[in-house]
Image (cartoon, rainbow, N blue to C red; front, top):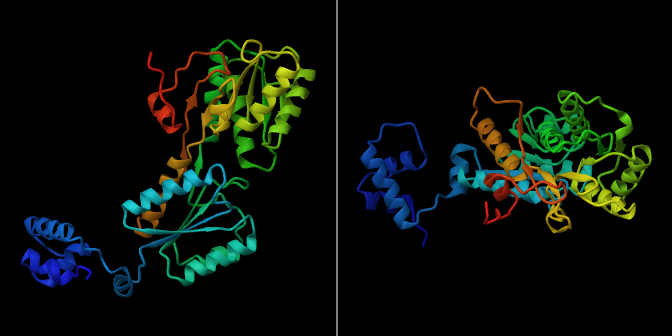
Length: 352
């Protein structure tokens, strides 16, 4: 038999009403000692609240929906884990739906969640929303996390792309490089514009003139990194370093460098972005900037909690910073911080 609120009241020697006030966190004077005794009894008896009954009383379901375009994508799993961990701490259950890059499926998911009286929605790596969808959600708090294509909207949690590019470029410039190529992502991606801006800004702060001939464009794929590197080698054969807008393009660029008879990092140093699994298994191991997926998920969940609690002042946008993981492809000694290495699932060398 499930433990009831009556059982807790009898064990604590108080009224059912007093137990209800404490367990439902109702603003009513209850002594600290009594409160602690009730909570201890509830824990020892294994009391679990009846969510359905509470939902009828409070019009809250303690359930949050998460809609993602692809729940098994390279970033979505970590983002969703961050969301779920933070919401679980706050007592919420998560319902996760994959929209499969289909605007109609996403719209249907929104309506399904709202009809089931969820308390809020997190949109993870999505961009299809229409004005009708958002009007439908007007009565439900919602936030966005890592919108990949369009510019972030209101209540968004995104990576600090400029900062990540600054990390990569500052590292290469610090190693003495002045002729640094850059492979950017697709033009319609918001991240592409920001990472390119960070590349330019770091050059300018070091007194190095920006030259568009040192920039090529890829499509985030390995093959496009290979082609972009071939183009750069033809246009700028004396470049000594490369910053690639993501790890797959960085790996493609390394293959192009090797096919051209060049060594990495002896002839050309390479830094990527995202810290995908390939960056740790490829040889040479890829120096890269981490995409703070789990941390973005946690920040998005906290933003949603703040909205659901009706807090007056909530930032419209939260930018989360990654960190630089120094490995073999840049020619520098491994010097990643402990926090950054832990975020990437790495162990620091024992000699450090």
